[in-house]
Length: 359
Image (cartoon, rainbow, N blue to C red; front, side, top):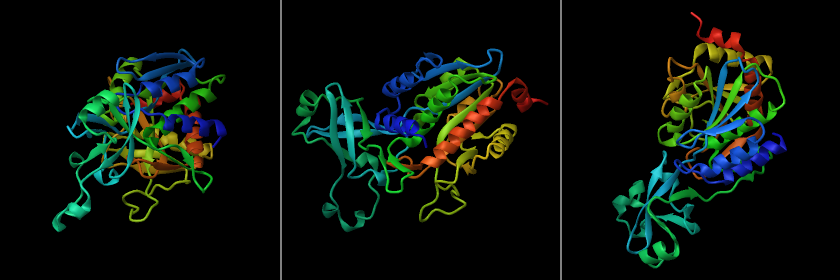
């Protein structure tokens, strides 16, 4: 992985932006894409950068979602504790005792997710999972008035994991929050940067979508704005190279190359586009592996259903521990995915795209 890519990943994962609160991430994307193409936004806040190679060529949509899973302040108890609602899919077991940041009108407030101590639980409840609706956030307040007046916390404020980007002892492994899907957003940005002064036989639309984690919403509005001929969705793929995961559940391994996703809960990869991606990976000597998600979906679920249908594929970077406070990626996988996406963008001319849906 090049240093510029690593710096981008650090910047974009350290920033906060859960579903409905992606403006800060869009500002980072806009900064990096300045001068590369015309920038616009849909009415939900998805950012779109139009980079023209051949103005008569097909329209290619490269999309990664900007939102990370997070929480929202639901209510404040009279004692000054915060009850919260999840934004996106959280497994309750990964939450207890984790640090969080609440973004308020007066600035960030740090807190910790708590619950009733096990010492106070009867024996029959100690081994049961604590549900999210039983948890709370302790911000170190004496009462509700201090939370609202002094700290400036209000219902509707966003809440984020408190986790910073860090390289690990294995020099190509990187730990951070929000890989899902800042890694995809970074791939989109790096692709357009690499093609800034290059010829390509199409019009590329680099998109940072919003609200993917709560229903693929930004994908639906941005695809209507673009009306693309091909959709390439850039995502974090679920790695299975850890104790307790069987090959049938996930055979994805960090360091083994880009992921070509053949199935998720919202889309079956378009077969001709899938074959083109495989052929491209082989011809460019890009290491790759196949991925599948039987539960859960991606922005491709909305993109491929647009209008009469859009041939779509999902290309991922293997990620451990998604939908938690921190995940791990491998730099070589990012570099492989970037090389593959760049090669595809250079291949998708009018003739090639026409063959994808020819009868």
